[in-house]
Image (cartoon, rainbow, N blue to C red; front, side):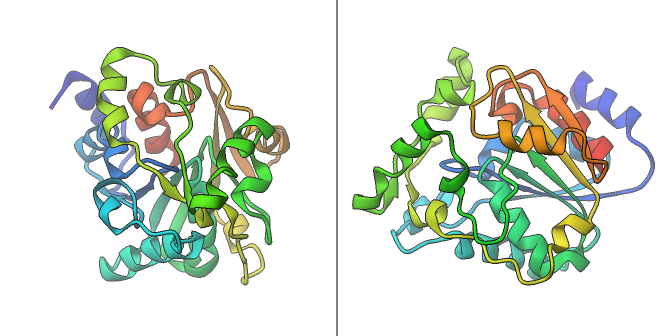
Length: 248
């Protein structure tokens, strides 16, 4: 156990928790590798989802994969592992996925954490919320059916060691995951769960400013500003781990 993990374990309030971590676009479950040790060292159960067509499941990629596919990925994990009382965490695009999951399986969840993530309204797609320059890049995938990754510096990944780890693992993502509107059927069930929003501000990507402005003073949310780049679980894993321990 590292000193950082030991410190985190010592500061954890009592009780074993269950975390399910959902990555963002172009990533995979691998991106949580610097966060999971601290959570597990604190005595918690941790599951990292890799959504269909990404990460180590990139060989399954095909253009007809959509947002519903990825929501189903998480729902099946919850069901097959028999998970309940879950702290469900979504990074970036993962916010779309955890919102859809909470709509369908709120009874299995304890709380939601949106890590610099989309918090969609019913009938909205990820592309509807993106900053114009990012949306233009994403919509180039309409012709091929696949979205090219955004430059890693946009995600705040600039350290040479981080780049060496991340760059080979980033893959294209089916465009329909970004263009399919979310359909919420259970009267905003996700808004009845305890919720934390983490806004990454150094540098901000521009796509999450609107969510931060809306949520910052909303008493239904716990709002945290984290002065790091968008891929905080890679750039600032100890800070993210502390936030997740507190959110549970």
